[in-house]
Image 1 (cartoon, helix red, strand yellow):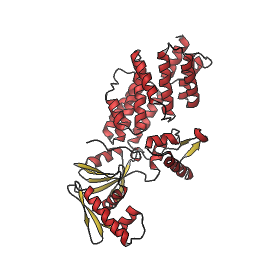
Image 2: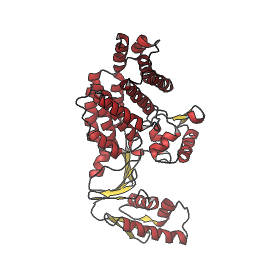
Image 3: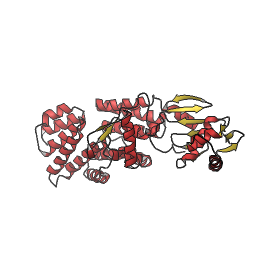
Image 4: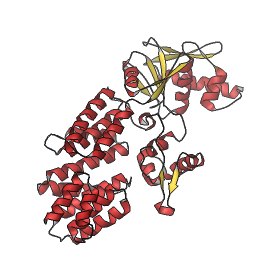
Length: 406
């Protein structure tokens, strides 16, 4: 490898894109094409980056398996940055195995981190945590150590573990400082600001206040009966009942929790659960049936008692009942949460990340565009969507994911 290629590679590793392009911007050999592709990706021109990386992979001879594998990893990183979540994960795993076998442990580790980041984006947190748990960042270069810490912090935030997230970000910041890459340090600083932003709303005894992520963690660890509207579960210090697939029952439970310690009138329950403005006898009968189902579902945690005016929630162990609500309640909140990362998303990638149909996602995008909260870029199959981050809020609790284990 000639000196210009070596110098360009070092410049890119330090985030000096223009310095790298000055050295190899006019060259069309395979190594130069690969470095130009990485440079274009760092400048945000993902389509040009993909083209250059594919040309580079074709230009390397069949015997240069190591170089080809590195191009595959670079293309996977570009796909992740451009939110092309349908990019074949198997190709990345094959490239990682090749790099591992040929002794390029740094790039093999980078490929593994890319796979973990993709799993986090599509909400497969358990798999991502398992992969990260068997990953020792100590032998890695500082930049990869910083990336490892950033991913760990993101997972901790999704699991509502603020202290673990803060510790991971501290480690990542030190590694990024050692690596000397300003863009990486800025990404870590942005992640750290999420910990200080309002993450949820606490509703108790008719009053409401906003909570930061660490306060959300404290509420979930308290002895209160928590009706969690972020995960659609009900929990106390000793147990959890999920109503994620029973929206009517959860709507009833939330309405009862917001009325605690008093009861909630039948008309209010019918409006909240069935979205009916007027209560006739059939709706009253249905309310009695659903209240019975809720009473059975909540047996380990609470009882649902009938009163003269309606129904009341009676916790078995907890001294108080609170509702944990998302920072923003909107039918399109989950789509907005993904768009708020500042990257451009295709509707198919959003559908994959949310485990929803593309038609459902497209309806949400159209609604967001109508209110100016999302904007399309391009046309046809190339159309992508972007939105500015929600000002003053963290979107952690708008994203679908399970509650912390145990």
